[in-house]
Amino acid sequence: MRETAADRAFGVFVYFCLAVVLVIVLYPLIFVVSASISNPITVLRGEMVLFPTEISFVGYERIFGNREILTGYGNTVLYTVVGTSINLLMTILAAYPLSRKDFAGRQVITWFIVFTMFFSGGLIPTYLLVKNLGLINTMWALILPGAVSVWNIIIMRTFFQSSIPGEIQESAAIDGCSNTQTLIRIVLPLSAPIIAVMVLFYAVGHWNAYFSALIYLNDRGKYPLQLFLREILIKSEVDQMAGSMTTNTQAYLMEAEAIKYAIVIVANLPVLLLYPFLQKYFVKGIMIGAIKG
Image (tube, rainbow, N blue to C red; front, side, top):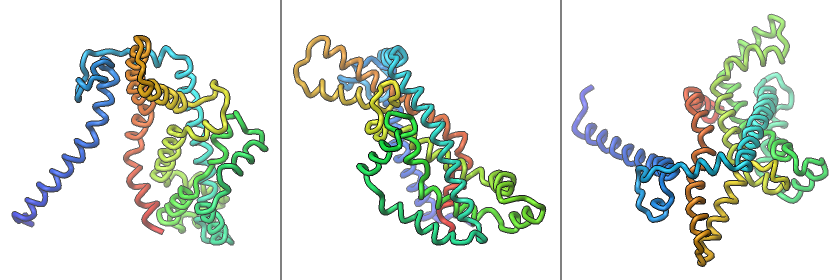
């Protein structure tokens, strides 16, 4: 089919809009990377616009020389790996039975689960529950209260219903497979897209979480990276608002500026490295899981 002049004009307009969006998205990313390896003085003065000026790695030197930040980084990795594993296990164990047509009472159970999306106990009752369970100042206080997401259960259940033919599961039952064997040998191998989506959702959530740690943890040795990053940002803002700039304060602000950009790169690098491996499954999984059903 030949393109008309209107079609070509519309195509040019679409590509122009995409180019504008690309610039808007890429500029902050490039700026942060450049600022993290630039002299903090040039960044504070606004002399660095896009590309690095006066290359300096002082921010990264301070990060990898700070034991607390490295401890927080290790804690965040641990919380993310353990938390995502538990999230994924609980979501699968909840979504698979609810996707089976032969599961009696699944509609009622689904209704009770969905009810918790709109009505929750609130912060104070949750804190009291965590305290009474003896989870305060432990890793489990950050993981168990949010061990499962209702929204993700619904997405995964919908994927199982719409993408895993019931005939395959019936054939597995005829061949002698139990429900557990059917899940492990038939359903999960066919569910790579939705599992990848769940891993990305849960992992990013754990990696960026800081509020639960702020409430439940009081041992700095158990702080995640995000709490140390929060302290650096708040300290820098307070010093800037103080008004009285001594030589030591100016030096600190310059280091804090370098650390601020460097730690953004260090904190987000694992997530940026994870996404390319899950990208081919991500779009398919989220579209099938969210639209159908």
